[in-house]
Structure formats: structure tokens, C-alpha cells
Length: 151
Image (cartoon, rainbow, N blue to C red; front, side, top):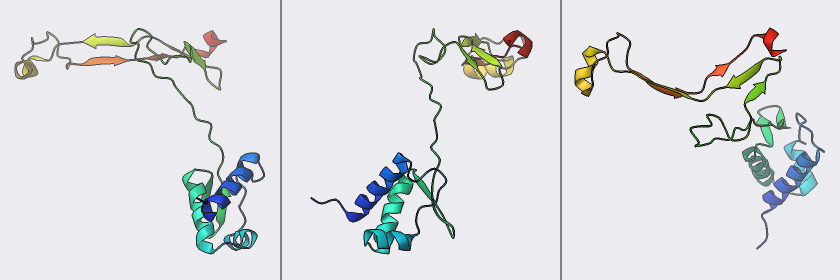
């Protein structure tokens, strides 16, 4: 089975983008120029550009043209189900930000309290002696030392 022409065109443009022939922010040739280059109809060229748009390689700006999008370097965090670790599985215990501040992470802190007397009856729990609302939390906290101690 032969590959549709729009896919062959999209693959060739994708290779040119990946190789750096078309750098981020540069404009692709106009649709009419691509039609002449590949001997294809306008619908075939539009389908090829649509596939590149779906892949996130280009963006079309009405009235301006089609431009190569900048490569986004994602920030990846590994999640873990280990409750004793309290952070992802591999990024370490601290992170130093661009301005030199260091954030350290502690294990999740769990707190449990009883509901106030006005709510205790409806949830069948023992009322608390304080007026604070009931809460249960388990969330990591970031601790930011002062810039003087981070140096």
C-alpha cells in the first residue's frame, strides 16, 4: 500500500525541521510555493501542514503564514507511590533555582483533627475542644532558606 502524498510531504518537511534546515521561528514556504515544489494540490499541502500542526512542529498564523514552533523542553517529575519518600523517584532532595535559592523538600506531614461540635453530630464523630475546622492534609512543603544561608 502506498503512503498518501500529504504524508510524504509532511514527513519530508518534518525531517527538514528536525535537521535544523527550518529553525524555530522561521516561516515555511507559502502554500503556492509548496504546491510547485511538490506538484501537489492546495488541499494536499494543507493536509500536510495540518499533520505538522497536530505534531506541534508548526503553527499557522492567519494572514502571515506557517511558522516552525520552538522546541519545548518539558520539566519532568517522576511520581512515586512510596509514602515514606515524599517526593518523586529521582530528582534528589533539593533544587537550586535560577537565582541561587535552594528549595528542600520534607516528607508529607499528616494532620488530623476532630470537627467542631456543630458538625460532629452530622458526621458521628467526637467533637473537638477547639473552634478550628476539621482537616486532614498530606502535602509536601517547600522550605526556602534565606539567600545568606544558601550561599
